[in-house]
Length: 465
Image 1 (cartoon, rainbow, N blue to C red):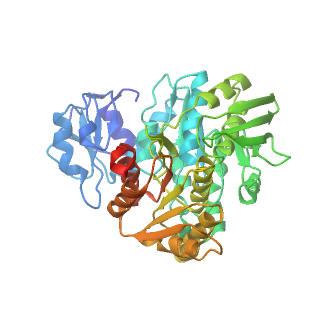
Image 2 (tube, one colour; image 1 turned 135 degrees about the vertical axis):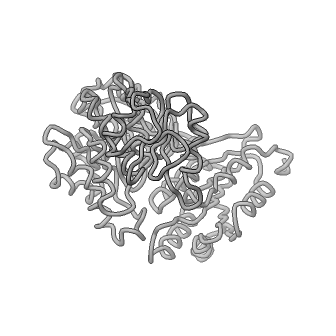
Image 3 (spheres, rainbow, N blue to C red; image 1 turned 90 degrees about the horizontal axis):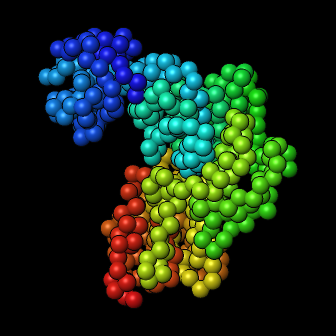
C-alpha cells in the first residue's frame, strides 16, 4: 500500500479520528484478521455473523497496527466511519486513483475465474510488478484488500469480480474500474440467487459495461451469452475460444496422460504451440482468454506463451493433482463447485484414470442452484456414469448424484451416499487401492478438501496396499 497518514485515511472514508494521531502513517498491510496485523498496518473491524472485528481491534493495535477502521467507539486509536465495509472500498478507490499508471485487468465468469486470475498474474508479471488476489478475494471485503496491496511500483492489478446478485460487479468496478475485462462463461453457478441464466449474464455483463472506449472486452466466442455482451460495451472487443471466428483461437487440442492440455494458439501475432502444466481440458480456454488480453495489452507472443507454459496453480484446492508413492492419485478440486466446473473435473478424472485405474468421484453438494438443484445434481450423476466413473461417493445433500448414476442404463459402477466428510474419508481411505484416481469436488462450505488431504497423507499400509 502507498503510505497514508491517518488524516488522509479519514478524508478518503468520510471518517473522523478517535484517540488517534492524525499524522501517524499507515505504511503496511490493510487487514481484517487481527492475527495478520503488523507494525504499520491498518485493521478494519468487519462485523460478522459469528464474530465482530471490533472485539479484536485492541489486539491488532498491540501487534503494531497504527489504528483501526471502526464503526463504533473502541478501546484503540481509530478512524470512525458509518460502515467499515463501504469505507474499505472507499479507501481502495482512493489509493488506486493515486496510481494512474496501474493497469487494471479484470475477470469474471460462472467458473474458472480464480484459475484464470492466477494465469493472468503469471503472464502479466512478465512486463512488471503485478498484484493479484490471494485465493478468491472477489467480494466487497476481499476485493478492496487486494487493491490496497498496490503501491507506486505496481504495473498491473489483476482483479477477480464475483457476484451474488445484480449490481455487485458494478459496485466492485466502482472501486477498481478495469481497462481490460475478461468474461469467461455464463453457467449455473448462483442460479438460485439470480433465478435464470439471463439474469446471471446481465450481472456478469456489468464488467464490460464499466469499460471506457479505450478499454478492451475479452469475450468467449463459444458462449453465446458472453459473446452477446459485445453490444453492451463502448470498448473494443477481442474474442477467444475454439470457434473459427475467434481472434485468439484454440486448435489441435489434446491432453496428455495427466489431463494437461496441449494446443495451438492462432493469434494476430502468429501461431504458437502451448503445453500447460495445469490439469483439465477447460484450462485451454482460460489460457486463450489470458493470451487474448495480454496480446491486446502489448505483451509479446513469446512472453505470453512462456508465461502460460510456466504457470502453476497458485490457489489451493483447484485441480491440484497429488500422486502418492503407491501410485494413488488425488485430484483436489474442492474449493468450489457448480455443474459446469464439476463436469470439467469429471472429464479430467476419467482422463487420468484411462487404462486400468479405477476412477472415484467424491462429490459434495453444489450450492446456490435454487429450484433446479435436484435436477442439476441428478444430471451430474448421470454424466459421471455415462463417462465411466467407477465409484461415486455422494455427501449428504448430493444424494441425487448417486441415485441418478445408479439408474443410468448399463452402468457397472457403484454409488453410495454418506453423511459427511468424515464418513467419506473413511470410505476412500479404507477402500481405495494403489493406482486408483480420486476426484474430490464440492461447494466451498462443504469443506470436502478434508477428504483429499486425508487421502493424500494416508500411507499405503492404511489403504491395504
